[in-house]
Image 1: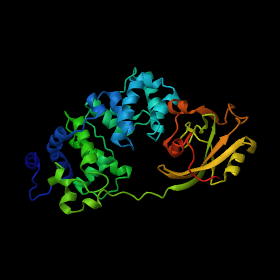
Image 2: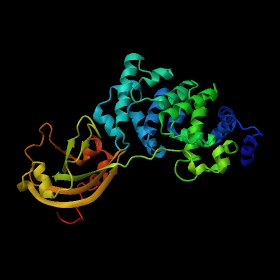
Image 3: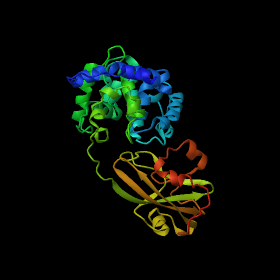
Image 4: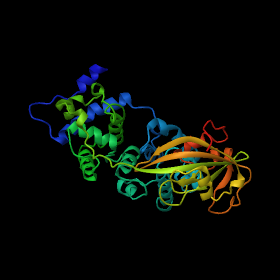
Length: 378
């Protein structure tokens, strides 16, 4: 097999290729490599527009292996655009629970509703029309258009930006929208008209398993090794160029696990902002003692049997980082506010597992429900 790759490597003469020519010449070795090495993935088995769309949205900011079981469950419950458009919000979020970036799911439902109203329950077979749907940018539109409809348009994500930057030894900042648009134009000019979907997937695949984002790329396995200027110039480790991210804001919280008779308290978050409309364990901003916290929550001390410290937790979002202290509060009587609108509700653990979407940010405390605390008393 290595012999075949070597035969497919492109020899460059005295005159260096232009960027367009370099990209054009990588087509055959790239497609050959993809035919031999494409991973078997559930959404590739039947690349229908709806399945491609759902998979691409799920894969944003999420690893392939993590997405596989979510995709299977999601498609089983919502097999069509119409079924997604009619989904109950809590059920939709429950199926998305753990994937994070929950606005992706909200936009999926919004876009499904528009598709039902304007396109007869189908996704539009137009790159430009796809881009008009909520949550669909140039990358997702390009992926659906090329993979599902065979339209020769590029699908440029982080993997593709990294691969093309290295092939061209480009030191332009790939986080800048103008640089992404420039690379989209370059790829559009060399896109194979009859294999656009395969070509886009091959570039994504190379970026995922060969020209990897973290650690050294596996250049010896790359079908484009002879064309890669970063490899030739010995600057693989310096490319791609990215603007350093701003430091995340640190937010401190005290999380309260309020338990009584096998039930635990949950409250719904606000309709806008981080983790909008999802459920959470009651909390207080900053680090407080158990007595201070239950006072803020409006629970009389006479309702408390005991309080125990739970493990500390930390969760990283894109722009903020939560540092959490946990306290379990065992109650002897339900607070008066139980069941009143806007206040926490007490739910059985079984229902927490099946009905109420609880983000992964609270997983360290979810695991302790109903278990004896090994921590010290508050």
